[in-house]
Figure 1 (tube, rainbow, N blue to C red):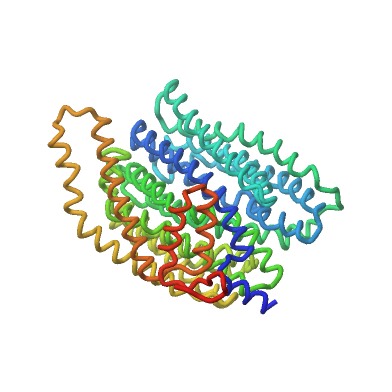
Figure 2: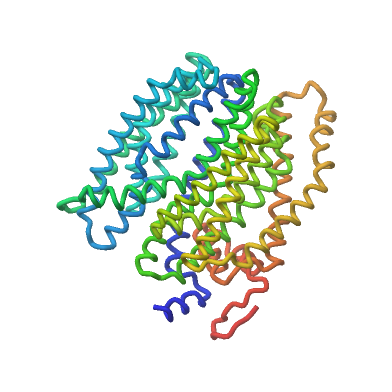
Length: 561
């Protein structure tokens, strides 16, 4: 086993596990791209159409519901992604059919109880925030938990059977419906917190019904069995699922907790507006998680399989590769968000959101920290280290809450953002420590080099930002006050695109110069570009650039630089 692993790691070809992660990630990334594009348009529309008071009420109600949703499904949606391939690998396929059936029943019962609690407690919760008008959106959104539980369990079963494409199609379908129904309800009843909540709820009905049909088809080949005992469900599957759900929902937990405390600890006269501005900033910063989440959809089953084989060396290799690519692609977009946050918010949501620029900058930095630790969380989850994960979550969550209580009364939404970053930073440090302890992971030198490339790029764009920020004002003066609104916005968007097109090549050039890639990265990139049907000359140029300073075996077996 050890020799085989060394051979695999030392080869210029990516291992079969890295290939599996790359293949599943491509489908997931494509689907996530569509999902986030729709979410992007949705967030712009609601920020411009809905008043800050109504938008704040909607996001506050959604935060309460989202916090409940993390625990409400009992972790079964997360557990299925691990146990479906696990039982399949052990030739116990009959248990899969029993697991999905039992999971659907349990999450339905759990949702009914949670909905009843939120429905009856809506007035009390709205009283805590001194916002009586919060009760109705909260009651409406609480009903969504039943649909989201079933939708989550069904799509996790499909993902566990390695059909990433179908999962992405279902999620894109739901998100598209949310956008379409929001526009329809705005037209019929006006833009308000209630119409936002109603469209959000209704968008889950058709996809959930469709998911039952797809689960039936995907489980048709599974045999009947005696099923799974409640003891195995209670002592093994549920604890793992809850910890996995908490780990993967860390961003939701921290951002939602900061948002809830911001609404509670701030001046009631301005708290809802601050929640609205903080929420749109958090939504925009969360887009940076697109690639890690795409890789994570297939990463957990692969890691679970490797852990079953006790191949810790290969686990380290695949984790390092996934972490490296996640950071390389995420960082340049994060840098643009950090430096040009006021301009981005003003362009997308209107000038009234410009003052939230520091919040977006801080949260973008925090999400990059989250990206660095994301694959480590997933690997630890695959190893079923429930006590370790619980300890990590308790510590990072406590730090986040304590920082919120200390910072929000004095610094408002900026304090909430800093508190969220504190939670992300502490959890990243813990993940590195426990990853080293349990599977020998050491932060590879390439990560430090990527951080150095990011720092140099950041200094460049900070130095350029005063001159770059004057460009929109110059264009406005050149075009005159009578310029149509959409032409002015289009030119502003082109300006931001220019900044991105400068930042990404600069960062990539620095990453290449600092030799941030390995042999298997180049091989995986070559295969991916080939599947995209790019011209052979372009592929050769990209491979040559990425291979700078890397020794690659030639056809005769010797090495070349």
